[in-house]
Length: 315
Image 1 (cartoon, rainbow, N blue to C red):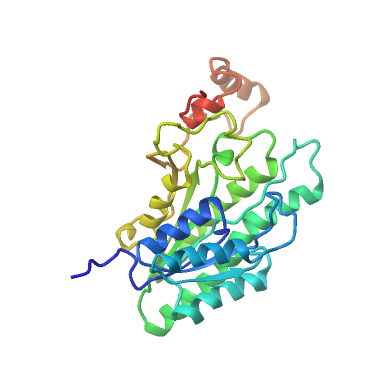
Image 2: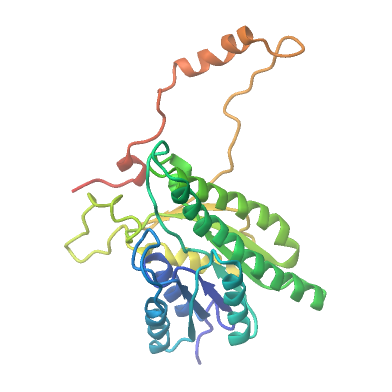
């Protein structure tokens, strides 16, 4: 008697799935039983440069089919509103409905804020933040319509991709950090809006060695003793599979950091200190008396060194 897989009968869209994290996530969802639409724009440059190509998405879709799963490829830039519509419509036409959306597509155009061009800012915000919005918009519309038609909640899962560049800061990535912070805001807002329709929306901050992060992790060598690289995307994809599954029905609006056999659930911001005016409103002097001492005993820069943030040591 065959064992039922966690995602049997469900369909998924994974964006940016031709390489790296997206590829690992698409393969994991298929391994867990989902039918997958593999989306990728296929440009060779991590900055979004080069000619678009269907090859990366087609190769991953073929890999899924060769393993006995169901998959179709989609060549499309998710920052284009109509192509995002077509992506969701492809899932519905191919599999009858959409159940899972994993947003992963992105590019990098790093520069210090005083050197960054308008185009470098706009392009990264467009692909990451607008790309997440576009696919979410059409998936949400699909689920809302189905719920209204049936008169009951439906099954829906969104897993978004943020970054610790948003959490801890990244000096040379103001565009990327801002986009990733925006994705967290989009996640929490959408989670509240879609809960009544049966949809959960969560966001992950993954640490993984991909072409997007090859510079960041250049000093962290891969193990040579046969152990799985702590930064392998395969450490991230199981969490995505779990969040996409019925088992995670009560997980909604959450931010999770994941890498190398570790998952951390991040709390929403909490108040660290509170000051009340002794009069109707604050004066400059009173603010100085209250707030300045609070920071005098704290480090001038509270961001962690890279190795501490990553929990890794350089070889």
